[in-house]
Amino acid sequence: MLSKDIPSRRKDPEKKMLLFMSGRIFCRVIDKIRLYKINLRLAILRRRMFSYPPAAPRVERCLGYRVRFRYGADFYASFRDIIINRSYHFHAQRPDPLIIDCGSNIGFSAIYFKHAYPQSRIIGFEPDPAVFPLLKENIERNGLSGIRLVQAALAAQEGTLVFYSDGRCGSSLAKHMPGSMPEGWTEHKVGCVRLRDYLTEPVDFLKVNIEGAEWEVLADSEDRLRQVREIVVEYHHFPGLARTLHKILELLHRQGFEYLINDFDSESNHAVRPPFKLTPESRYYLLIYAKRID
Image (cartoon, rainbow, N blue to C red):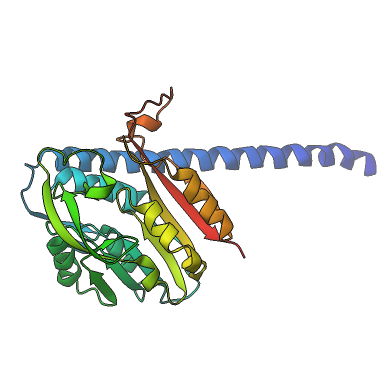
């Protein structure tokens, strides 16, 4: 009996390996099917959104909410990055996380946060006079509570500054935009507040997408960043803008954060695609995700 059992026992590892490999192949097939469905969904959405005339107000359903927008291309990009790719997702340690949303635009990020954490408390900053009414409308039309909206830019000092906007997703404080205002943009005077004044208690998640002002605002808030558990910063590399990526990373390291960098959008973020090339006119965006580890 012992000699007869030996061959079957030798086959057991082979069977286990075969089952293991079959499982891996099955998972890969499932992942490919899932990715195909996502890409198909995005392709259909992109075709529809890019067919809309610009500046024509529309309402679209998103995560069960109704979102009003004016530019289909911007809706598509936000839906892809925030809803599908979950660029601002984080794992809360409490049911009512405190989230600070710097650069709320029309409210996609706030809607995602409320979908993920219905009891979350959100402070959202949006300075653009052309965009803020849409943000306010999208929060109110969906009955989202626990959200405080601040119509102001973030800077290293309070006051009023010149602000340029294309009325969509493009905007910047004038001091962060080398040269003159781009053609077709509008000049505004906007109020400014300091991020550090809002870092007075533990913050679960800090999102920073403020069009080139990220280094100034983070540097001004450095001694209070340890109040924050997780951060996502969109870094802007624009022609003529000071190169501050290394400074941001050094600051995060000093304050006890681990971090990673992601290009997040090779579809429209062309400068991050290989083969790589850098010139003084290169324009690209990066996401920096950071988590405090001590």
